[in-house]
Image (tube, rainbow, N blue to C red; front, side, top):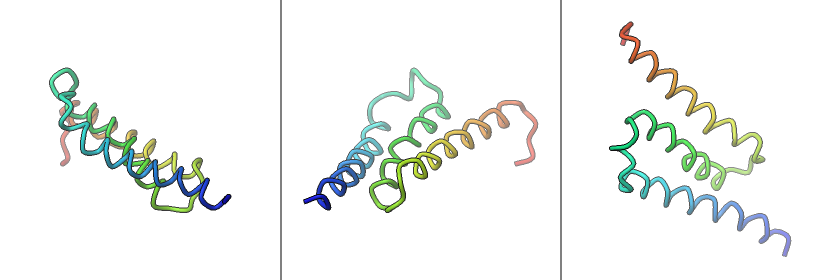
Length: 86
């Protein structure tokens, strides 16, 4: 029975993340927020999906959406600065 208790956390995290990945773009968040803000917010459901697929602990999986959000934020600031290499 202990096997099922921790496995359900991962199953719920995956389906919750997948549902949010589908619902957030259709929720109408784009007009009040800029495009890069919505992209940063989408890193959270992505992290939930990764947590559902892997056997890694939560602390390790937390680094994935945080790193993704930081990368998107830094890239958005870089593009907004007008200093374009890409």
